Length: 233
Image (cartoon, rainbow, N blue to C red; front, side):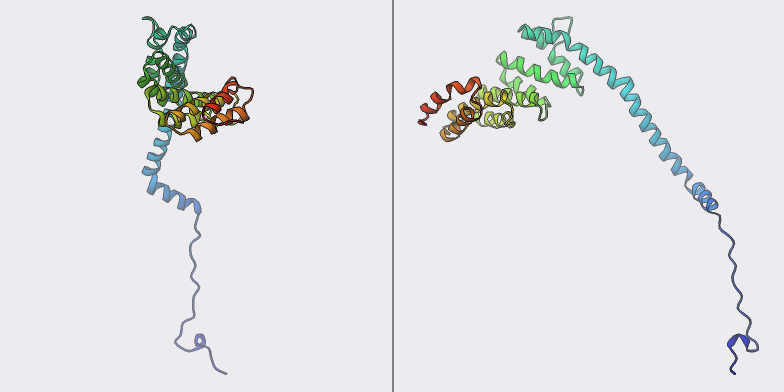
């Protein structure tokens, strides 16, 4: 019977290698010691960011918003009684919308001040500043945002920029369910289309008022406007 190699003379028996048992905690300790400087730096940075954020919110942002809200009180009162200059520029003791928009930029009140300032400028005939103010206001897709887009369109219309006015009126009339703002600015959009010799587009705007918003104040005159454009029922 053949002998296996391990039974042959001169051939040593294979010995099993025994590895020392590894403790996971030892590896973790080694890794930490190796990277502790980096870990410490990252932890410090995170801590600084978190503390800085809450410090900013509590020590600056919230008090600043409180001050901005308080500053809006007198300008809004002046605005309600049509004292536009005082509402916009202040009364010597209390600042107005223009200053609030600058001083409290980044706060909700500062943003709203742009909207009020735009209306004041528009009523005072300063269309260029009205446009700048309305463009600075961020109303998103809210009702106030659409109203601001409509007022911006009026400022463009007063400036003779009919194309820009139409763009703004389209934004103002984007919400079909709004029976107040949409027909109001559809009418102005129709007038702007007429000013640019786009009679068909003007007809479409007026038809929308007549058919979709028959109870709106603007609907009463739509048959007359359409008749002037050659559209007769």
